Length: 239
Image (tube, rainbow, N blue to C red; front, side, top):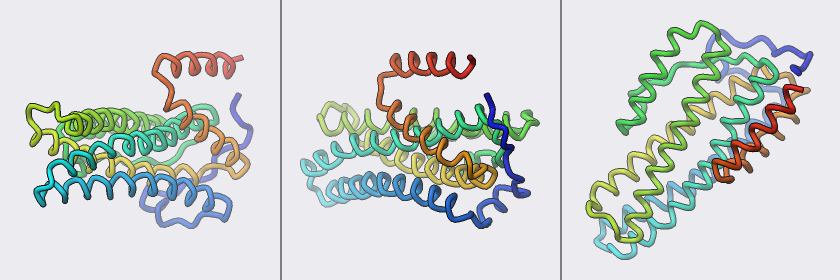
């Protein structure tokens, strides 16, 4: 059942939303979510930079050990980022929240798969006349991109760390490109979160934070368990 409280008026554009002031409670939620994401990203980025620097200095063994650490750090970032994106979608579907959403720009991505996803998303954005559908489509696309990029990054990092790769140069290029595009997805998610909070009634802040927490926990579950839980939650919501 949708909340009786309607979404607040939104700005004219995503740029307006980004420049807009948030009330104290919303600001606290925003900065808390961003801080947690930035901390996870910083750990991944610093570790990868160290691995690349060691490789450039000719310390092959140490660089492979260092890049192996980034696989777990990527998983941590992905769990938190995916949890946020799923929470945004679930809350918007359940409560009818209608934030602004700007189309993804393929020029902001480095990898071929990410660029292709961004182009497809931008094309579909032109035929989705509903602001709500545009928002849900963007969030869904970002979630798929994050999961795909994380899978590619972790595979390449593990291959390098375990010294199983037949083409190490290609694997290093993979972790570099996927890291770049994960960062772009993170920036997009932060902007989406701000637009979402602009129109979110303050009475729903607690419910939203709970959804973020639940979705982040479920992001760690095997896909089959997530489907079972999702099916059960859908049935309950529909009662």
